[in-house]
Image (cartoon, rainbow, N blue to C red):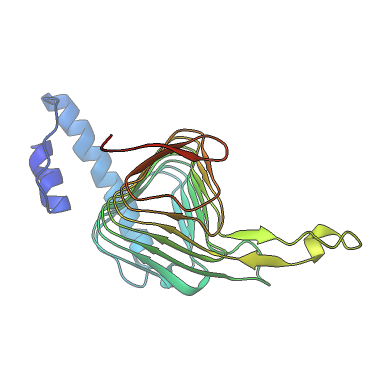
Length: 228
């Protein structure tokens, strides 16, 4: 039943490796029903959305800036602040983990630019996406926990002026299709993670990657290709 339900929701075949008993199925279905009720309330404030499943404490602010496809899942105390110049566009089957934040605007004098996310993207717990510049995430991208994506840097070269008064420079940060980003990774502003890349846990990515590369370290460097 669980496999069939998920397959129908996602529009693709889903097969789990565990046989749920009656009590477990009841708990799962009851939990999802509660999440769906919370999601209906959030959906009212979005520009366009399919089904929304929202766990306790999940929040969306400036929801009229958001257009999303079917099946948006919001983890416990996750937050999407969508205040941005170009808005937020999200594909089908997108999930945000517990305590994760997507923040398009931090201060009102400098509203963020835009965020675009493709289909079948999963963000794990405690992740942060800072959409000060433009952020683009492709299809079938998976995040480990505590991943940070940045798209802005502070100017600091004038030593006669305090740093916070020197303004910021914005960048376009891109994650292409079919990428796996490991736990604790930081992706710096302006970087492009090419399709098929695997980024090892704890890496700090400061430059563009090659397609189908495996990169690790601080700063991240290629150690091999996926087909080696």
